[in-house]
Length: 469
Ligand SMILES: *Cc1c(COP(=O)(O)O)cnc(C)c1O
Image (cartoon, rainbow, N blue to C red; front, top):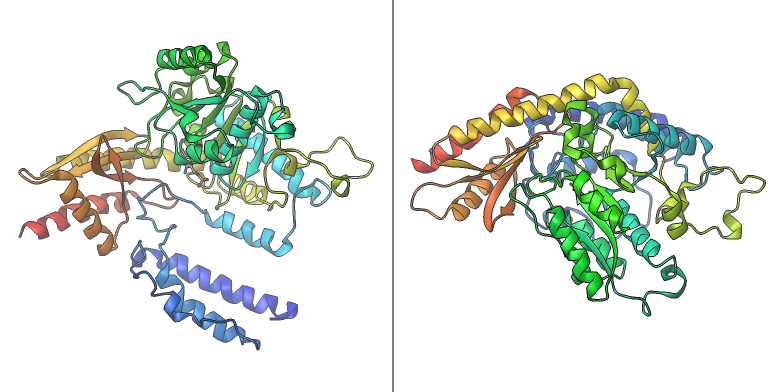
């Protein structure tokens, strides 16, 4: 394809996209293909000669959409959503045409300066105090790793990045068992070692117990370990549990630990002032991550890490070889020094479009609706024969089991889940809760309507009735 043909194919792609969005809710939500089915439609080797765009586009239409799980489907209730408001898709198109590397201020001044402003807009939207700065990362996983590396180096007075950790006291990091697996991964990759991530006891509400945290730190100091950091969770991935940030951070401050808060999913809901008690005290944290690409509507990837003081993280991750110096400029921000990859996408553009096209009022309305409809669905499911809630609604996430008398509830729940996803009208996924197989139900798709949520209850009722007959 030649540069001159861009317009023709961009128009074609846009028309395809419009048709896709229009008919999305007629498709089965979860891909209905078997493993290997798509691969079998592709030639084993690349072509030597150019192919016509017509052929390529036709193959795309024939092979790809039917092999996708449709994440923008209004009846997507699985995992957490990866929302892409249509306006953010448009911004991504524009960013992809400029195809810039936004690693240094000089390599894309607009990208850097819009990023700084968008981080500050979201800071205000979430009600965080002035002083927090931040950076847009690809994912919460990356932000979590950056935070763990920073707590490691801060505890070692930045000796680790120079001479390694071999001669140092063993580091310890504390977290609730409800934190995401990316925290475990970060601890492994940071060379701290899985067994030195201390999963602190939780109370009945699944929040980390601050007194147990204090005891764990004291015991570790006694044993010669070096406590380095605390990782809190607001809106855990499995069942939505949250730590009580204020009390836990007080303990961490007394013990001079670096504190990172993972609010990847729930953070977006903090644009609603009435929901902020959920993370009360969070303004005392050193680092906070949330994913506008989950619940806010900014297309993946878009994960914002707020930092009370960027200096420790930049000291940990920043490297400026001669060939990356910006001659004659010292007072500029080079965001690649805040994160792991050098190359960076222009992620701020979609936030700029999104926040302006919807305004906070509309974004709040959507989140409030999702929560209200999730509560309605939870009550309706609980009222169905033989269904029980296993965890209550935390924001818009709850879990349930199907438990007819005399049967193994985990087994029948798993069978029901498979039936639901083969049916295709809705998509749900599972987790384990207190050793039991439970179904997670999360409402959060950007354009989801109340009737979409209520249809989920109908589908459950129907499939169970069918099996009884
Ligand atoms: C989704 C999620 C993550 C991982 O997010 P990515 O951006 O996909 O890396 C981490 N923590 C929590 C609490 C999450 O919900």
